[in-house]
Image (cartoon, rainbow, N blue to C red; front, side, top):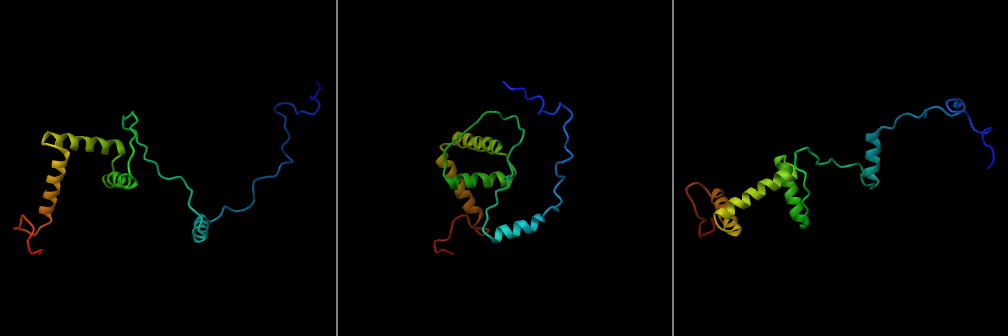
Length: 132
């Protein structure tokens, strides 16, 4: 082994006077950078907003779903300002309530009929056979 102690600076006595100073260039205008990047077809790779909330829910739940179902689920969460766990709790409660009245299919049918009735003009509880 060779003795390298002559080449090493003692701890705490490192001379940094020969190093270059801070970068003298000004900070870029990020709005201009974004516009130029978007016009050039570059993809925004900035981090997306996260859906992390401290709610006490600490168990993982994974399920396979279609892209459309996930999009619709997230739209419900965003529209109601719910975290996914809260939306799941509400959906389970709805499913349990529906099962107390029959099957999920029957409950969905009843809800669809109710929504259709609400969209009819006042005084009509069934669609016109003439298609009015």
